[in-house]
Length: 438
Image (cartoon, rainbow, N blue to C red):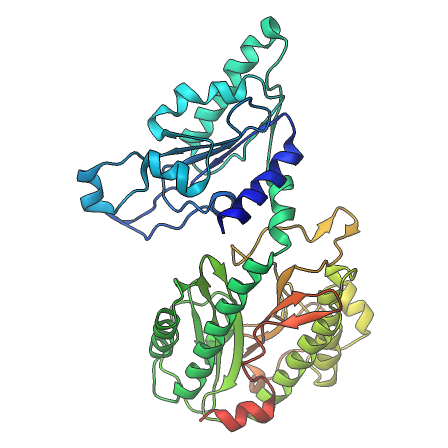
């Protein structure tokens, strides 16, 4: 992978020209008192370096006479490493990660100016670490102060995201291998969860089966807090308590994916805990499944991303009209968004190093068109909360529909000729689900 990281850096440096780009590692986060969460590297930093330690800074300076890729890292320290884990250190970082120069992180203020003084701009994304933001801004201010005397130096501060993120959106062959592996592990976990779930168990027991299999198969762990939502809990989009005891004749919505080598999967399935859909559950489920299939059918290079969402909305509105849950002209309902009490989110998101990965969905009034190598989720849903308030002019919802929540989600790769569903190993037809549950 080091050759691929080097290629990525070269692509970024070609785009920034005489600029200098600065990338900060992720901070460590405290869980409680002096106990820290497991460290998770910043995705842009990792994408460009593969370096997986905190308290590090990467600098790209394509205009510099000697050093184009510079790392600042924690030095070796036996006492601290005894407590907190081994460090790569300054010397090994140069050989292992291909840096032209490596310094100790405590030399940042001393050494950084030489990589800024001849740049025409600084590429740095202001983050959540206000102290580090101030540190970089102070360096920039010092350079601005000397500009009148020198006639050169960085006179602008720019976000590197418009340079780096389009590269991250198009996945390489190596990245797709990781995404496929993350998908297959999550597929196995969802299939195990469907076999395991039954009335009387608690949601957290199903969660434990899923996450046990994630780790057993080599994943880093969950890609995000697993959602195991039975009954009306499925109407809460980001339900994560997972504490309820599952009951007969309910649906179970599971939204769970894993991280493999930092790349993520994201799957949702909804199925009857007792093995058979009720008539109302089946009616809603079939609408959502039809919406997902129609959305996926839109996927090919050149298609506006928005078209996948619009296709799902049309199917959902038509289905809810047929059931009497909506009334009126479908085009007016869509324009006025009167379907939103039932379907309030978008149909998907980009997927990669981040679960909600980087990339734009719209360029002002111009739609973003799909390209080969992009990966995103397709996840329509219908949620009929017991507390639902229909849109103005729409009918009241009969109690028989209350508490039904359905979402179906797959991870889809845009290919040269269409698409590849990375997560199609999890059944989703009514017939398959009624065969394999209960």
